[in-house]
Length: 251
Image (tube, rainbow, N blue to C red; front, side, top):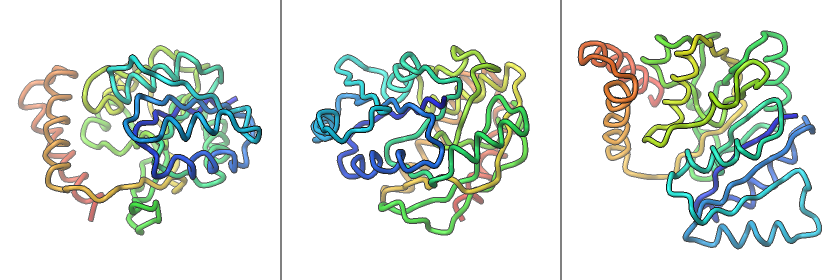
């Protein structure tokens, strides 16, 4: 079984569509754990109404948090606590999966023996309509390679807990917690395998791109220096590689 983990915060604009999307997967042996993280819009009410509906999918479990002060990392970790499947897949509430995402990725992991996999994805607009900007992924990615390319997108990942202890997948309570988690896993000797097929749409709402870039720069530098403990020289070398690839990915 695949356990899907989704943090949900202020997702009223699209969570109803997301609730309809996952049950359309052609792979059916899954459970889906949504963690509502104290939204300030009407997301919680939408999920409570769904939970009370006689037509709800019994494979969908909703956790309502009032005491989570750790953002997406804390919500995902609470979802991991509740997960019962051998495989773990993360899905952010605003992203979109193709209907064969789970089946194709699981077949890929079975075929390659991967413990950790990720796929290609396409940038989407506010309505998750693909823009044609596709992020291709390498066949494999080790720790040193990952330091200079944040190509692993959270909603494309899948883990086999028979090969990676579930404890290793928990995310630290820092900015860019997902990237930090991937690096930690890879640092332990795991090689991630990339499936270069677009199976996910990454919804990108209109925001200040300059602000996003500045935030990303600060976060990646902090990961190098504080989380990974790299020297200034090593951090600068990896940062240059990251900056070049991040720019090309958005062209």
